[in-house]
Amino acid sequence: MSFQYVFDNATDISISKRKKVSQTVSRSGVVRATSLGGANYEFVVTLPNGPKWSDNRGLIEKVEAMDRTTVGTVKINNPGMDYVIGYQGNIINTSTVIVVYTSGNTLTINSGANVNSGFKFRAGDYIQLGNASVYTVIEDVPANSNTITVHRPVRENAGTYTLKIGTDVTFSIICVSLPNWTIFGYNQVSWSGSFVFAEAL
Image (cartoon, rainbow, N blue to C red; front, side, top):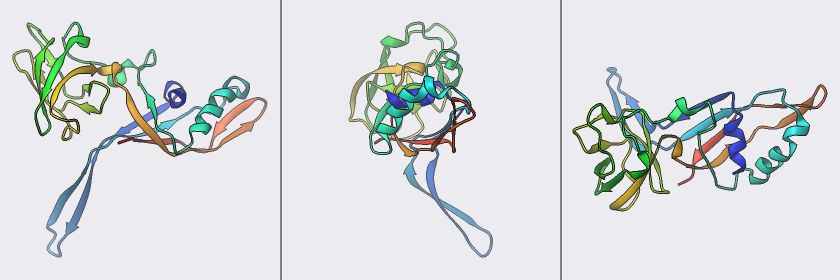
């Protein structure tokens, strides 16, 4: 819960999930690329400088206690931030969507996603299989389709899962770069840089 403080008070959030890639360039200029897998989430989060130290010292202490060794969970659901990962489709009750996973990076909608028009999911929607990994949808899923294609191979075992969608998803993360804080002026706190979090696998 302590890392949630960082996300809830962020002035900047960068979310990266790019694959790790090895590239070579021949003498003739031919570029060859090979995927090394990955597509894991990385978050770079910046806190504002200037809040009151006395209001934040207890929360900062909890963040420091977790340090770079403890896995935490966060949601990007602070009021006013729903535009970041909010659901974009036309399903009325997103808590009832059930999918079946067999293999690869596709899921099949089993139930709970009935819409007459529009889209069940849009590219960029965030989904989570139960309490497991979070994925992003990479192609629109129109009302007459039941196939969801996600950004990486699904890590979970084949089976049936209830989805968490949009701001309901929870990321498991570990801090890989923890900036120092400084008290300045009178009762104000600043940071030496950004927090960097990696998806905990």
